[in-house]
Image 1 (cartoon, rainbow, N blue to C red):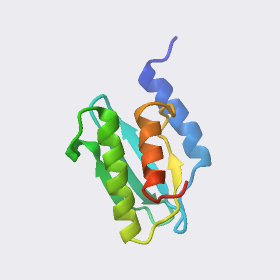
Image 2: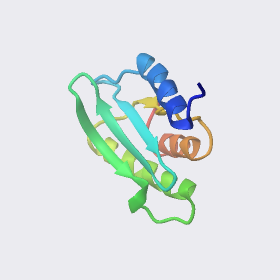
Image 3: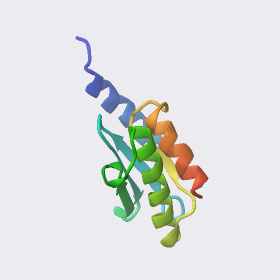
Image 4: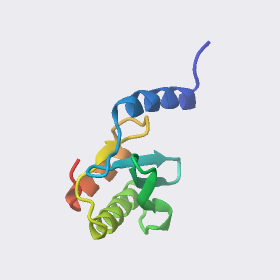
Length: 114
């Protein structure tokens, strides 16, 4: 029986999450990408608390990639205000290309360390 794309992504995400754990000193930057938007949150897994969150739905831009880059800058600014400088990147089972890569590069450029 062949797996659907969603089932394949969930399987990849489980593999990633088995290795990527956020701590107080390096929280986890988790992303989710749909066809129309990208959401991201910085999570401290030891306390189970979301430190900062952002959605590209609220950003202005022509393409999903531009909106994701603006969302990354907003998230990095918000995280910096709360004292977070270094994070562990959780790509959520999505391939590291396109919008996901643009988001990660923009977050690095805005001051977050991966």
